Image (tube, rainbow, N blue to C red):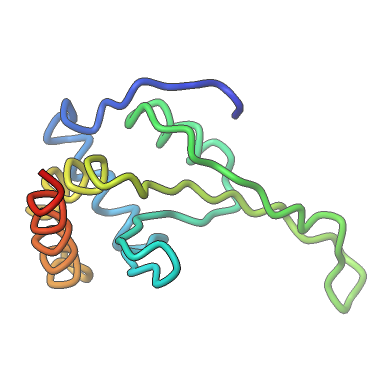
Length: 126
C-alpha cells in the first residue's frame, strides 16, 4: 500500500467507469470536507482485494486501514479490518467524477454538484 501509483483517472474505460460508479454508489461516499474546503470521494470495505483493484484501476494509493481486528464483537469474535480508499486532489476528483457520473444512480445528483463546484474552484485558481 505504500507504493506510488501514477493516476489513471483520465484514462478509465467505460467498463471501469461503470464498475467504479457501482462501487461508489454502494460502498462509497462523495462528501464535502469542511476542514480542507473541498470534495472527497472514497470507498470503505473489509475487502482488501477490492481496495487493491481500485488502486490498480485508478492508479491511486490513498489508502488507510482501521485495524478493527484488534477489537472484538460482544460475542467475542474478531472484527475484520476495514480498508478505505480515497481521492481528494482537485484534478483527480474532477477526472473521477467526469468518468463515473454517467453511470451513477443513487449519488448522481450529489456527484454533479461536486463536479461543478470543484471545476469552478479549479478555474478560480488559474
